[in-house]
Length: 481
Image (cartoon, rainbow, N blue to C red; front, top):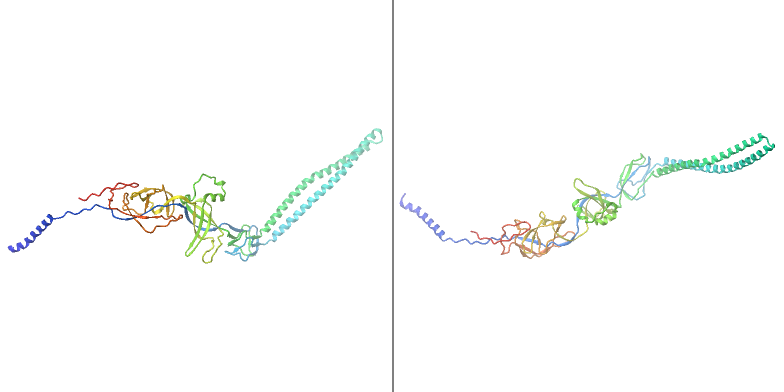
């Protein structure tokens, strides 16, 4: 390689080394700024103190309060059937819906009445015999007295020889015969009471037979006991039926019942705490007043919506072993009233509806949204505008909100957002907003204050560590090395 070519390669290398040395000698130190938290918008809310109304919702199927089945109590052939005795028809109370052939039962009534008349005639005969026997007894007793006096006279004459011994004996025999006649009349009178008692027993038996015959005769007519809607029909005219056969069924229309299942925890929040009571001594009305529960029934089927006022009736007899819920039965009066075709249907059997149970108001309750709860803690902004994690207890838990205890202090506000990662001692700054939210006592929305906060103000620095439920003091950030 020639000398000119060597310099062409070496000169650029030397120039680069010189440039690097010059730049290194004249470099400037970087300017370091203190570390700051990333600014994040945080909304805080002052939890309102309200009189909250606990609620619980459940779903159930509408059932009539009373069901009736027409069961044949006598046998025979159906000779009459009401023309409107069909499933779905509405009939008034007392309507004759079926008639069974009454011929056999009318004959039984006539026979029982004849037996009663015969027995009463025998009783009258006994009364007449008793009267005759008493009259005959008086006559026989008078005759006996005459015979006794005649016997005494002949006994005196026998001593004087005026009357023979045979005449005396004849008189004695005559007296004995008369005494026997008197005793026979007395025996007849003594037997009459027992004979009349027997006849009275027979009369009572015949009267019972007559009552049974009349009852069977009345059972040949089947009438509707209340105004209701026919639910089932199992008989036709001219058909022979037997005792115990189900002929038809109807449902009442004056009241409907709905049974819903409510979790035990929610049910306990609806019932006010009080002293122990003996439920056996409580009437149904007293139980309703003590529990203070009200109810509302709602039907929602597509565009069709309707509501009915209801009332708490009673609890079910058992706890559901699978869902661990308690059955609550509510009643709706006049479910077929105020019907608007196409808009408001009647509350008929089989409708699937929603029932809302409402308890007594809980006054002076501080509420927060349910989303504010984090494993028994909430995030708050304290009086020093720092984020804290505070443990709370839930006094009343609803689907949208929760009542917290103990209540927050006046300087504490609930924070709907946190500085990620969730830590305490995050410093906050205020900024006003325009639209506050409204509140409602039955569905308490949180009242938004006119303050929001930004992280951080200029004097704050990032916290190194934090513990749940408390704050740690901030320390200035150190410049980087």
